[in-house]
Length: 219
Image (cartoon, rainbow, N blue to C red; front, side, top):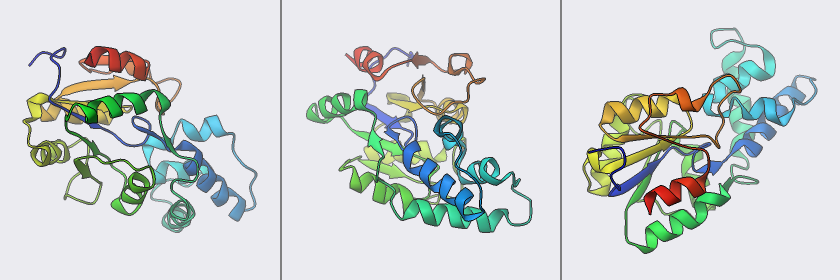
């Protein structure tokens, strides 16, 4: 398969690639800071760390490394605050909504592979009325991205070969997972990459700055 072959199925990372979850995660991060008597961090500072997960947000909020005393308790607080309202402000990126609508109307399969735990991913997907044919979460298998196993399992559930899929993500681990899975690796620039991390330098097959450009490539 060449990188430009139209895929039989699309697979998306969730946070930052398909859904803009940063507003709700920023709310939870600043709730953690408020709990410790600290002022709120600027939204752009938090947004840049969202794809790195809860532990990274704890380190950002409180300066507690993963192995530091108190980190686990802080992470539990942050996730509880987030879990209270996973979809208060989170939305599918506007440029992707028509793409998904057209893809589903054509009867083509699509799915989500995320490192987000199911306890948060499934309610979010339901709240946004999304209907992926496969939803693979961090705790569904013994391994998670960048291991290719979740991508392989998603393709199996969709009834397509990995080589017939595009995997679309906003983090280097997404590209690594896609390449290891034998899928076309699609890097997108609308997600949560840090300023110094240029997604166009990742070893992807395709790079898109906007959802409209992705839709145009899919025809």
